[in-house]
Structures are given as C-alpha cells and as structure tokens.
Amino acid sequence: MLLPKAPPIWGALNGLICVYKPAEMSVRKLRNILISKISKEMNELEVRPPAGYVAIEGKPTEKLTVSLRPNFADHPLVVGPRYQERDLAVSWSNHLGYYTSGVLLFGIKSGTREAKFIRENLPTRAYRVKGVLGLMTDNCFRTGKIMMKSTWKHVRRHNVDGFLSAMQASHQRKMFELCGVDMESQAAYDLAKQGLIRPANAKIPIIYGIKCVEFEGPHFTLEIQCVNEYEDYMTHIINEIGLKLRSVAHCTDIQCIRHSRFTLKDALLIKHWTLAGILDNMKMCADVIKESGDLVHQKSATLPAKMASKPSVGIPASEEIVDEITKDLENTLEINKDCTNPLDAEQKPETNCIPEDFESSDVEAAAASLPDDYVDEDKLKELELTLSDEEKVEQHKKALNFKAEGNEEFKQERYVESIVLYTSGLRICPLELHSDRSVLYANRAAAKAKLDRKLSAIEDCTKAIDLNNAYLKAYLRRAKLYEEADKLEESLADYNKIIELDPGNRDANEAKVRLPPIINEKNEKLKEEMLGKLKDLGNIVLRPFGLSTDNFKLTQDPNTGGYSVNFSQGGK
Image (cartoon, rainbow, N blue to C red):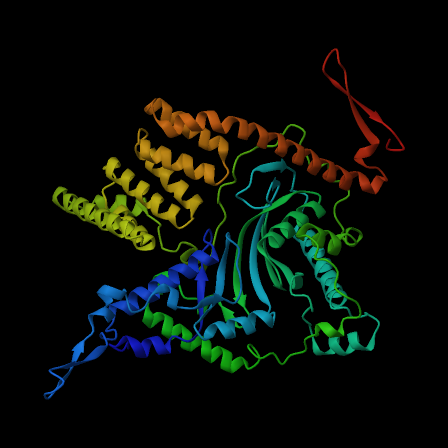
C-alpha cells in the first residue's frame, strides 16, 4: 500500500522495471511517458512543505524576538512542483525499434547503473518474427511499398526448416570467427565445452537459435534467440529467407518475447503504470536479478576483447552480414528444382501498402493495442437491440461526456488518457449517430498522431471519413499523416478531395503543387531499385546454369519502340 508521504516513495524508486513496448512507438517516447506519469503521481501525494526561515525582530538595545516563519519563496506555487521530470533519471537496458513490440527494461535512478551493466553483458534476447511469402517491399517490412510479387506455393515447411538449420550452424561458426578465435585452436575447444559464447564486438548480430514455429503459407512465424540484433537486421533476415527459397518475402511483425530472464508475463502494460504498479514490478525485477546471480555481474564464459587474435574490422551493413552468413548455404537446401521463375510475367510491381492482416495471440493482442482501442461494433449493435429510446439517449449523453473529457485531456497533452476516453465514447455511442461517432474517431486519430502512432491514426481517420464522407478535418488530418508516413500518392488523393470540398483550402492547394514532382522523383528511384532487385533475383535463377543477367541484352527498336533480347555467351 502506498505511503501518504512522497519522500519515502521517492526514495524507493531505485531499480529496474520491465515494461511492454507497443509497436509504432519509439523507446524515447515511451521513456518520456513513464517519467511524466511518475512525476505527476508523485506531486499528487503529500510533498515536503515549504522550508521555514528564522526571523529576528526588535530593537538592538532591547530584547529581540526570534520566530520561525514559512518561506513563501520555497512554495510550489513559486518554484514549481516538488518533483519535476528533469529530476528523474531513466535509461533503457535494451533498445527496440519503432515497429518492434515486446519486453523492454528501464533503469530508474540508481537502477540506470544496473541497466548499463546488463546492456554491456550482452544477454540473449528472444524474438517472435512474422513474415509473408510472395511479396517484397522496399524496406522489407509491411509498411513499405510493394516492389515485387512472386510465386510461393513451391515452398514447404521442410524447405524453411532446412534453410534455418543451415543458417544457425553458419552463425555458430561465425560466433567463433567474430570473437577472433581459431576454430582449430585449444581456446575454441575450451570455450565450446562451456556452451555458447558472446562475441567481443557488441555491434555484430549473432543468432544462437532460429526455428520456424508456425507455417501456414504464405504466412510463417520464426522464433530467434540472438544478441546484438536490431530491427532492420530482423526484417532483412525475412527478406533473405524469401530469396533463398526462390521466392520473395517481407516482415509483418517483430515482438521481443524475452530479454535475458524477463518474459512477456513480467512486462508492465502502460495502463498499469501507477506508482503502486511500478514499485511492485521493481520488486519483482530485483527478485529476478537476485535469483539469477550473474545477470548484472556476469560470471559465465565470455570472451574478452584482448583474447582476439587480430584487430576488429569495420562493421558491415545488415545486408552484408546476412549475405556473408548465407552465401555458402544454397547447396545445403533441397528445394524443388522444377519450380518456375518466381516472377509472374503478368503481374507488375504495385505501390500499395500491405494491410495488417496477420493474427496475434491473446497476450500479443492485449499488449500490442496499448491503450486498448478496439471497438466491437457487432456487440454494440446487439446491445442496442435491447435498449429503449430513453436508454439510447442516455448512452449518447455519456458518450458526449467522454468526448468532452477526452478533449480536456488532449489540451493538457495527456494523449494516452484522451485515447482511452474517446474509445469509451465509441463503445457506447449509438451506431446510428454517424456524425458524433465520426468526430470521436477523428479526435482519437489526433491523439494517436501525437504519440507517433501514424498507421493507427490513419485507420481512425478512414473510419471517420466512412461515417461522414464530407468531414473536411478528417481528410486534412489523414492527408498530413499519409505524407508523414511517406505515402505521397494517398496524401495527394486526399488533398484533391479536400479541394473538391473546399476549393480555397490553402494547405490542399499548396500540396497539389508541391507533391507531384516529389512523387515522380520517388517513383523513378523505386523503378531503378526494382530493376536492381529483379536483376539480383534473375541471377539467383540463372546461377545454376552458369549464366547471369549480363548474358542477356535488351535492344530497343527505334521504329516500333519494341525490344529484342540478344544472348551473349561472354556476358558483354
């Protein structure tokens, strides 16, 4: 139970906490929310009263009067809140990318030292990574533009398992090489007897275990145990798997399910970020560290940098790392040699954004939607069948109250709280009141945009427009979000719609002039990148025959504009 006075609680806020990071939110934004919540609750408790000062009054030749008076210069109304955000030191032990969700460790005050030790000890982390075969995007993730389509039905579960086994074995060999140990030396043997080792270089990713836990084509899910990983590296692994299996693939979801000894069940959701919840979680983390023994002060076999036989070389890019560890694996895979060219000649590259159509487990769904913003309209429809007209009016009034409260929270920059209130309004506002529901969706989109949850905010704007196709503010908000998300074609389409509704809109008219040249330039770059990818894929298909795309030259007929293909054995 919380103490009524703030100082003892402030003194207890020292240690590590394990939290759940939702997707589409940066670690820095999450840290700022945590600091804001702690500071706010601390100032709501009984804080230190203003310090007094000694007043001496009277004539020097007579008896003086000494009294203790309140010092108004030390009052919170003068100097500000007792506990300010800049006074709270918080740092993260592991960094997760913007689109990655899952377990994240924060050190608070003196706990920042423990967070630093854990980070430097390079503990292993486990990820659940989802991918889809048949589509390649420019950033290897579902948010990117589609660059290529391919057949995937020739890929079977055993093909994926075979490639992953070979990749894991290659990484384990690479583990010793990156540590600077000769594979044939006694040092390598002694280290191998103790189990897996950590690399001396903290910037090169190493995979200790990788397996396919779900395969239901074209969707598949991997579990990866690794160190030194980062978001782009994970997405490029999915892309590389697709290419090595004579297809293409992109990543749809990345979730950290374990960090050292901490798992999803230990992670604290944002809605539970209260002083009581944080202190309880901090105690749990302290117990885990105490039980593990070597989590902060490492005792297991770790290779020091001074044992390296040669100095470290430059750190390669993620694509180079993946290519290096997989370049010798093609001959270990038994893939159907009769599969056709993975490109469908009748399908052309598209530029549509891939929808989020993958499924999640109950734990993932509860955590990834922080705060919980799901609105079950089917359930609301069934409920309304049982309500009288008077009860519907009452529900409408409550929904408007939720909207008003959400607006106040938004003005105070408490965006998470405003999302909760707008969602509460949507869950009870009658479905027939399209205008009010449209405003609630649009307002919730504005709050999500403030939290950098652009994709979710775009979805809410779309729902608002579906309910009111003349809602100018929703179109304008979605157009700006599309532009921030680098979906310029969609943004331009919305701006054109705004001009139809409001021909004098300054932002829309300015965007109508500004965006087309940018879109054309971007499309030209995408075209060049796509041709490069096509060439790489063609080389993979032709390599078993001793050929490459350099053996084929396209010559355009100046009269007809058509192309002829010429074959050259020498590739010149």
